Amino acid sequence: MSRVILIRHAKSDYPPGIPDHDRPLNARGIRNAEAVGVQLAEVLHASQTPYAAGVSTARRAQQTWDLMSAPLGELQEACSHTWNDRSLYLAESHTLLELAEANSAPTLVIVGHNPGLEEVATMAAGADEARDRASGRMLTEKLPTSSIVVLESPDPWRITEVTVVDFRICR
Image (cartoon, rainbow, N blue to C red):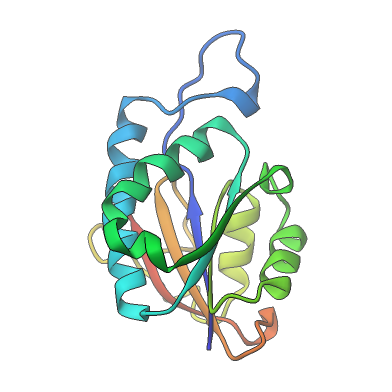
């Protein structure tokens, strides 16, 4: 079984004169990124498999990864490698699918952006029924910031056989 964990960056600020790629997290985003880490630790602990992580080079995605890594604790040791990937900045769904298909780790974590993440998540079987347990919000309504979507596929990972197994909004 292969897993891909899609994480939309936490809420960002919109400072005047700052290019989109360089926008930082706002105060809520900082709090939410820490909550993402707690939820991701739960997901990773349940799977008990090594993972790799690809993170968009956008400042808000980098900050999200940095803040969410702290609650992972000993689970950080299960990470075979982490890389910063410019192609994940506003990546379209086909780019995300290519990355997932090329991945060799049992679990791949991708920290990125909409609309690409949402498009991939809603392509999967079960997306129509996936609901955040805390808020009741449906995945098909929108993939909000600070969200986690866990997708599973038989080995090797193929979008035609992917199922949504978890959806969480981390706030």
